Image: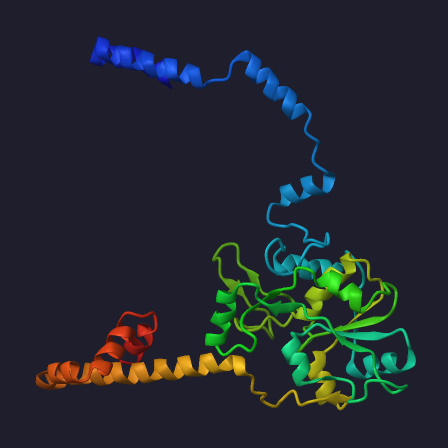
Length: 340
C-alpha cells in the first residue's frame, strides 16, 4: 500500500511528502526480518513438535474441548450444544443408554452385590433426601453413593449471586474432575451402575433446538423455556462416563424423586422444604427490595398528588430518601416501572 500510494503522494504534496514516504518506507524495511533472521525462524518452527491428532481435531471443532481427564464435557466450557450430546446418546456413539425404572433399579441393587447407584445431584440435595434406608451396613444396605455432577462455584462472587437468588449452596458449576471423582467412588468399570439425578430426564424426548431462520427456540411437546425434558444431570453424567470407559451404565427413569414417590426405600421427603442458611441472604435481599419498591411507590404517589409534602418527607426522612434513590438507580427499578 505504501509503495502504491507514494507516487500520488509525491505528486500532490511535493518533495516534503516524498521525503515522508521515503522515511516511512525505510522504517518499514527496518522492521522487516533479514534473510538470516527469516531462515532462523523457519528452522525454529521446523523443530516444533507437530500437533497431536486429538489436538488437531479439537482445534477444528474450536468450541469442543476435552477436560483434564480427556473427556468431552456435556455442559459448560468446551462442551458441544445439547442437541449434539443428545444425538450422541441416542445413537449410542460411546455406548448404549439403557433406562431402568426405580423398581428395576432396586431389584438390581438387591440381587447383584457389584451393582451400585450413583446419585449425581449436588451434595446438599443428597443430604435432604436420598435412596436407600437409614442402615449403613449389613445385607439389606444398598450401594448408593453421592458423586455430584455440579459443585459450588469456585468463584466466591458467583456463589454469592446464588445466595442472593435463594439458591442453596450458591451458584454451581460442573465438576471439572467429575470422571476422576466417579472412579474413586466406583472403580470397577464393568460393574452395573445406575446413574440418577433429581428428575431423570427422558432420552426419548426431542431436545429444545434453535430455529436457523428465526433464531428462536423450538420447544417440543413436554418441554418449555423453563425445562428441557430431554436434558438432565444424569444424562450429561452418562455421556461423560461412557467416554471414561464405563461399559455397564443404566439411566434411572424419573430420577431420585420418582424413586422416593414410588415407595422404594429412601430417607427424607422430596416434597418437603428443607431450610439451609445459605438462602438467608436471598430472603433478606428480596425483603429489602420489596420494601424499597413500596417506599418508591409511596414517594412517587406523594410527588404526583401532594407535591407540597414531597420535599418535606424527602428532607425530614433521610432513610426514605436513601431507599428511594437506591431503587431509582438500581436494575430492580424495572419492577417499579412495571407495577406503576
